[in-house]
Every structure is written in structure tokens, then in C-alpha cells.
Image 1 (cartoon, helix red, strand yellow):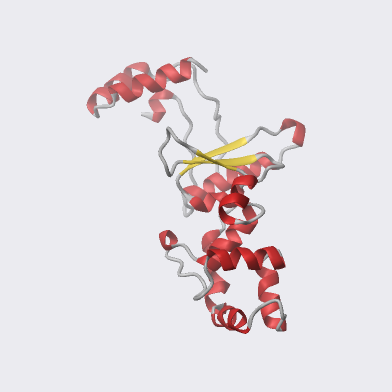
Image 2 (cartoon, one colour):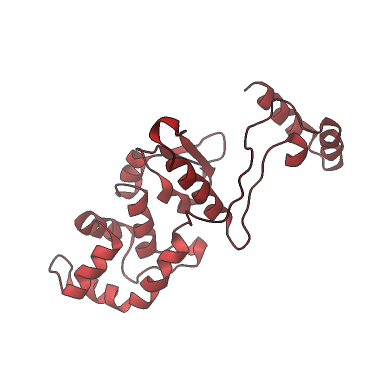
Length: 209
């Protein structure tokens, strides 16, 4: 259906969709500031909060409440909801806290609030690990013990949480079409799969751009 409409689709063998989104975002952010377009990521995947960057700008339109009631996630929203300063800090917090949707248990005894507090104090996950190794008094004995016991997990979890900025995504023309690329094929597919109403709304929305 997307091909019949003329909407580009991209992917990369061996990479998840969030890695493709992360790569496309990184490509746009790497452009000179005057040529850079704002990036808005529509997703129900909280992992992509790590891409939020007001300076770029990159924000997430989070669909947890449905497409009609999007939660606009920028750095202010991350601070309000998770008490972290930016997308990178959110990723570090997610590693410490864990995420059942990714099969990540987190560090035992380090919940979301504790993880956010440690990141406010030390700045990054690497700095927290260095503080634990050095016996920094900013960590309680229990926190230091839990982080030390969690080192095997912490050695691998960041690779699961962090999206790839460099997946081998092919260059495509991503301009949205004003009219369907193959109208007859679109009509046939819409009838075949019971998508007539959805296809009509999509075509009308593209024509109104």
C-alpha cells in the first residue's frame, strides 16, 4: 500500500526499526544548522526518548495515549516526567532502571528515582561507575554494592538500550507525494484488504499538504 501511494520505506538488514530511526535522525542533525530540518519522531517506544535534543531540534511525539492525544517529549518533558536533563541521560537512566519491554532487569535496588538522582549528581553512567570503583562518598554503601554487583549487566545493557546512529540505511527520496504513485494499484489493494476508508483519509491528507 505504501509503495502504491509513493511513500518511501527504509530498513537495514540486522538492525531494528529504532536503529533506522536513530540513523536518519543522526544524519539530519549532522547537517549544517541552517540546512537542518526539525525532527519529530512518532513512536510508542520510550527507547527513542534518548534522541530528544532541543538544540538539534529533535522531539518525540509519544503515542502511549493514542495518536489523537500525543505526548510531546522534549527536554522539559523529560525533566518533568523522569527528572533527567536530556535524551542521553534518559538512556543512562533506562539502563540503570531496566526496561521489561527490552528484557532488561536493571540494577537490583536501583529504581527510576534513584537512577535519576545519581545521574544528577554524576552526570553520566560512566561517571557513576567510576565513582563506585573509587569508593566515592556520594554513593551510599548499599548503592556502591548494588552497582558493583551489577557490573556484568552494565557491561552489556547499554548496547541494548542505545539506538545505532550509523546503520547502513540506503538513501531514498522521502518527499511525500501529492497524489498516489499508482492509483489503480492503491484502489485494488484497499478493496482487497478492507482499507478503503484509511486509504481515502491518507490520500486526502497528502493532497492537503
